[in-house]
Image (cartoon, rainbow, N blue to C red):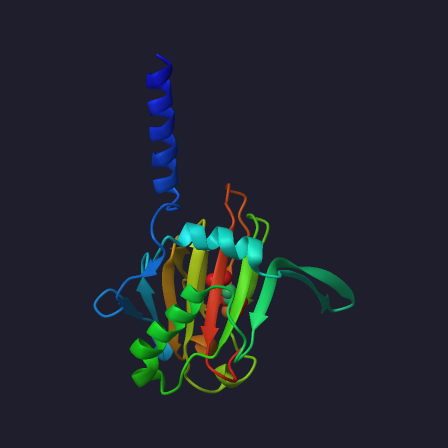
Length: 219
Ligand SMILES: O=C(O)CCC(=O)C(=O)O
Ligand SMILES: [Fe+2]
């Protein structure tokens, strides 16, 4: 009897770990042929590579623990408010917090380099602890993104959250649920003709970390 329960327990644990992707080996799939492009209006596009990074939940755990996360405050009109997510920025030349992220950037450079014409250089990390954490509607327009076509490549690990995109001039928004190693690349005019957001949600939402790779001078 004890033996049976023991076996069941072990099986349940293994099953749950595989559901969580914790026992999957950390690694990157191919991009060629696995990434699907959607053309949006006004010269913007998004590429989606679902589950590009396997073992993403183990990477989530490592990043959650190892990255020196910062809670930031920003002035909003006459008030100072907490930014509703934790942040860490890795500038050009800084060592990324996990070797698989350097590998990911190399793979992105190899695949997108010919089209982008320059490498991805910086990595911004966001930690959304629960459904109360969010990022408001914006384009990455600090720098060249406000005037030039560019790309921002985002890997999501941990629980999925919805990334919404909407045209700046108004119009219906589109939604992609991103987590567990998904890749999204916003390209073309996306940063200046569209906006994106990760809205707050009252639904149960587990923690998610996003890693955004950007070229020099795009923020
Ligand atoms: O978490 C995300 O996927 C989006 C983050 C974002 O838009 C930003 O930091 O500029
Ligand atoms: Fe953004």
